[in-house]
Image (cartoon, rainbow, N blue to C red):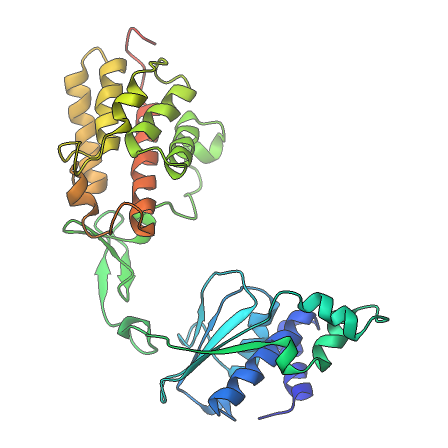
Length: 331
């Protein structure tokens, strides 16, 4: 393996400047490679690295190991930690290396008179004080390994292709994670981007916030629409929906859809027709109004996948209802 100084020089050239993260990234990499017994990582094709932060150290780890996101040998796990796990696919051994809390104070003790103690101390603090190493087990699914995609499917909502088992099955429908929601972007030019005070956007975000805070999907929709005066404040609605669980007490119906039926009864002079239109839109988006059908593949009520999906359902329902013309005598 090259010396620390040479590896640091290469990392700085790639990253663009010298910083404490470059030093830590190089030292993390060197410690892990020594532990695995890999002396020439850039020539070794069986190394995969999981980085837990998207800051300077990650560039240094890439520079030292040669692992690349586009080659599927560098993987980002967004934990926000100064840590990385190095996996040898040949031996199946893996080691996680991290920088313990308190290292910044330790650097000041090593170089108390330095103008930048981190740059100076991180070079000289012994590994046993600067780093922690732990042997771990990493199970890598076939669809996460380097190589050609193991399969490709199409999202039934947006029609875009999905590689390597990143789809989500809702009943018998295949959806991409963007359509399950919430997505990280919105198409430009939509009404909500032109007008940040668009009531449907505000209602969607408020409903998702209420759902994340513990209200069920139906309660979250009702409370959000009440807050923005889409419907009158009727105190009995929230308690009525409090015990609603679509798969158990709700008779199978999704609580967000049930809330929509209630709201349309308040807003519309012809609620039967409005409910039918709402149901068609709900089915087009989600495939079913039945809670169990919608969520059977997403785990229990507390699973992250199910929580994200239900956030999306109640948010989209609130946005739909908030955007309707108000033709009720309550308006």
